[in-house]
Length: 373
Ligand code: NAD
Image 1 (cartoon, protein in one colour):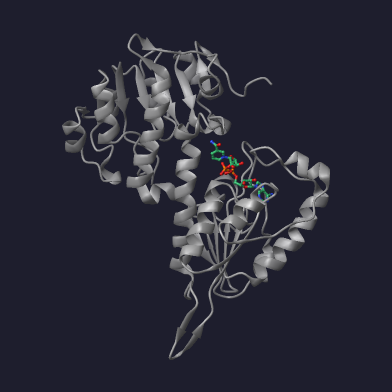
Image 2 (tube, rainbow, N blue to C red):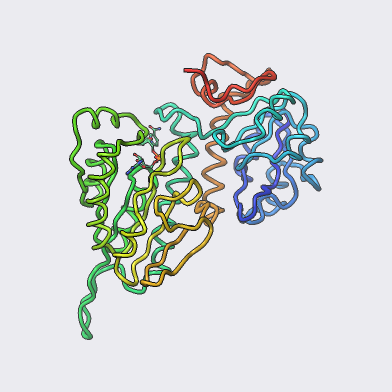
């Protein structure tokens, strides 16, 4: 098979979908790999490293994609990228299925497009789980971003000049990113508390040595949130949650919000009134900035210092800030996924396989997303 890796086009996207390590394995498996020149540079992987691993370097994207049976990307291809694909090629990456306006264009080219955000959160899929590998990085990086803007120490310090209190860190949303933010905050010596609508997260929060903030829930509400993903909550629950979150946010020095509901706008957890009541010098890092933000005052892509001295960080694409490791983990996820697809005879598009079926958004001229339940 001929596999291509184009350079990412989105501004600020420094990741790349294959590393010399994964290229080497693909070449050893008998595949021809072409990398667009410069694709890995921002992730600390120069063209020469790919060449050494056995890849050919293409001068531009069109040349890289022209012969490709399989194309690996981090972000969705734009219209020109889709136009440059070979008819019937396979495209694998984070294709943003809920907001991708080019699904029809991909179907028209008979592209078999796999959106890896739709991977089932199962044990079998864990080694391909790009959301986990990238959100883990986002959680870590969010805490470091907060420390850049926070004008105090994180740990408690007892010095001859006096005692410094530890920072109080509040994490809202305890998926993969939230858990890593808790762990990173603890490593830096902060006092950490966390909240999530899914009751199952209490044990995970406590196992990391943080305190779980519990919103009283009816049995019905607990049942609704017993799955892997959170559901949108009722008005009555949101009110109970809002009061408790407001109380803890006012006492916090740093708030990191990570709450997401797949395919929906991010739930608003911090209102303008709550932020207005927070302490001067405190910092909010909103990891949901790209899908509307968990904080009412977040501006995606910007860092804003408010009049009351609170800083709101709306940085998007945090994994892109750690592009070398993010790419390396992402590329390994893709390599494992390719293991399901590649056979010595060619592509194995076995739609009985729940991983392939769940992620395949266009195939054989049809758009398959959203799937009919
Ligand atoms: P996510 O990015 O979809 O959401 C982040 C967190 O926000 C979730 O924990 C969610 O419950 C929470 N949230 C949503 N609305 C909220 C609200 N109003 N208030 C507070 N919190 C709210 O989550 P994720 O990191 O992708 O993880 C999603 C699920 O997948 C979790 O259950 C996780 O344990 C599971 N998971 C499974 C595997 C696996 O088995 N392969 C791997 C990774 C994650």
